[in-house]
Length: 163
Image (cartoon, rainbow, N blue to C red; front, top):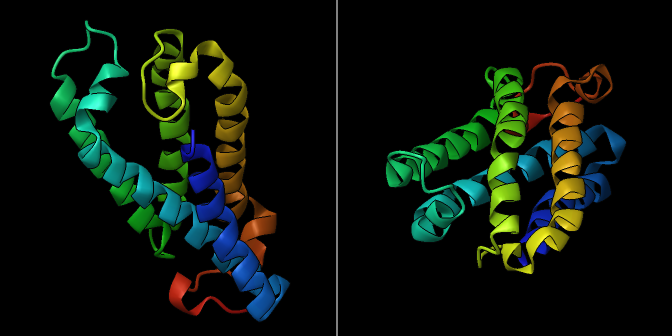
């Protein structure tokens, strides 16, 4: 059940570090970097724990292994896309769609006590997972799509985000 803690760390550490280094005007860069790192972590997980991810899918899903690997590539692409001002908005939209689209697999895994990422706890795990999913969706929306998050910096790439 360490996965939610890793995700929170990936989100919060860059945000807090950016805030401490550059104040509120640099916080957006930290928020973007945090969610990008989270997506890269998610994507790598599809390659490191492929069989465990396959177990999260119902048996009727065809081509489960290639599907898990393809979604891993998708998550890596989202993570990298979030780092570029040119692709950030579309990556943010796709990220939110991925969170919504993948949630049923998490519900299935929890109800079937799949033994990875806390799903072995069963439906109780959804009490942690569902709010975490909501936080992740909000995080992506705020830092990539909302006028408030985007107003901090307009179009600068993550490496030189400035006001």
